[in-house]
Amino acid sequence: MDRVIVVGGGLAGVRAVEALRGKGYEGRLTLLSAERHKPYDRPPLSKAVLAGERDETTVDADWDRLDCELLLGERATALRLNADGPGGVVVTETAGDLPFDGLVIATGATPITLPGDGSQHVLRTLEDSLRLRARLTEGTRLVIVGAGWIGAEVATTAVKKGCAVTVVEAADTPLANALGPELGALTTRWYAEAGIDLRTGVKVAAVEHGGLLLTDGDRIEADEILVGVGVRPELGWLEGSGLEIEGGVVTDASLRAFTGGRGGSSPLEEERTSRPEIVAAGDCAAWWSERYGRRMLVEHWDTALNAPEVAAATLLGQEATYDAVPYFWSEQFGKMVQYAGHHTTSERMIYRGDPAGDKWAVLWLTGDRLDAVLTVDRPRDLVQARRLIAAGTPVDDEAVTDPETPVRQA
Ligand code: FAD
Image (cartoon, rainbow, N blue to C red; front, side):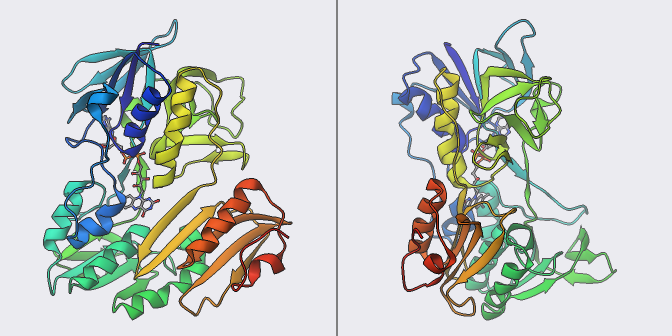
């Protein structure tokens, strides 16, 4: 392999470049990114950048030492794979067709927008954050659509800047999709305490000039509207390539892509042809988790940070699997909220500490195994529980419930 292209200049892209060089790849290396910036971190965009405490978040990488050609402001528009062997070309907007014998797909995700002619902010890029920041002035009526992670973080910052913030949410509680209604309901008072008008069960029909039109015909007036209703993996450029796409780029546990296949649950379906020279990582990858026996698409920073290590090893023909316990954090309403694991099939959920108080945690268990943990201002619990989840250490309810003792083995 002597011509590797990394498509996508986010965290996963830069980490793939670093990992390839770190593992001894000496051939030609190109990183292609639609954005004009060198790779930067996105979590501060809804926190320190929006608050005006930072203006940029560039990832600290030594591009000269990495010996990587940077094609910034350049979009991949198509992928053509060789039919008779490995490799192919990445078709670009202005830089022509770039041949490769190794490809990393790291094109991340794009925010979902709402119908309507009115102006709506989304928050994905540095420009998005700076644009919104300039509008968040004293007295501005900001309406946020979506009480998810991004909505809560932006609401936190906007209210501190003196904006009058309304958050509308289609579900009956914040974070209902991510955590379920019981836990979501526990965060409702955080909005009230911050002076935010949270309206749940509200469905938006369209973004109009100066406000939102709701499906029941009502209107909510706004000076600025932020839509934070989720993201979609950025995969349009792969249409017609033959790569298997199912929500994201379908990969096996080593992050190897496939052609053919039907997007079923097993990575071993006969219809699939493995493409060992193509890997995917970060927000755009739907990878097979051996730990959970299912396909995962995790749109969080920790995955973009660590999965590229495995993707690079796979590309270089080394044995590696990505078997992480997913992790993320969110800073909202002055609280550090952290989550590790995966709980959709868990048997039971137990509280650790009083959720009416300021610091508490929730643990999900199946039998004597810990599946997942959510902590609110209890970072030590997160670390301890994450370790037990990763190791599959047996626990019992008594050993994990008492907030005065560490989360520990049974
Ligand atoms: P991206 O960062 O999306 O990078 C993909 C890059 O590829 C982009 O530069 C894009 O322009 C480029 N690209 C796309 N298509 C093409 C193409 N066709 N050709 C060339 N280039 C292309 N996670 C947490 O765990 N905790 C947090 O607190 C947190 N906060 C966040 C706050 C915000 C505002 C946002 C937006 C995200 C946050 N995240 C957080 C999520 C985390 O930042 C993402 O999971 C991470 O950025 C994903 O990295 P990535 O490299 O996979 O994708």
